[in-house]
Length: 164
Image (cartoon, rainbow, N blue to C red):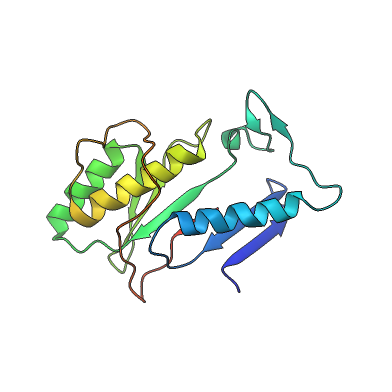
C-alpha cells in the first residue's frame, strides 16, 4: 500500500517505515509492530537483543528500542505564537522543524536508550503543545509516559507522520 516500506541490507540491516494520515499516533506504531512481528516470525529470523541494552544495531545511537519516530503537525497559530510553541516543544526534548507549508515536524532529540513509550509520549505531548499551545500539568522537560494519542488533525496537503 506504499504506507509500509521494508528496507533490508542498509546501515541498520533492517528498516521498517510506516507512514499515513491518522487520527492517533498509535495507529502507525501498531502497524509497525505488526510488520516487525511478521518479519521476526519468519523461519530463521530473530532480532539480536540484549537484556541490558535492548536491540543491537550497527549504530550505537540506535541502541535500545532501535525505533526512530517523527510526526508532522498542522499548527496554524500566528508566526510569533508558533515560534513560542516550537520553543516549548524543544524544551520538552523534541527537535522541531518548520516545513515550507507551515506544518511542523517533531521528533525526539534523545535517541539512545529511550523506550517506545517515552517516544510516543513525547510525540503526543509535542503535538498537543503545537496544536493548542497548552502544556498542561503533565508536560515536563523529561520524557513522558502519557498515552500515545494525538488530537492533531492532518489536512490533505499535510505530509503524514512517519515512524521509522
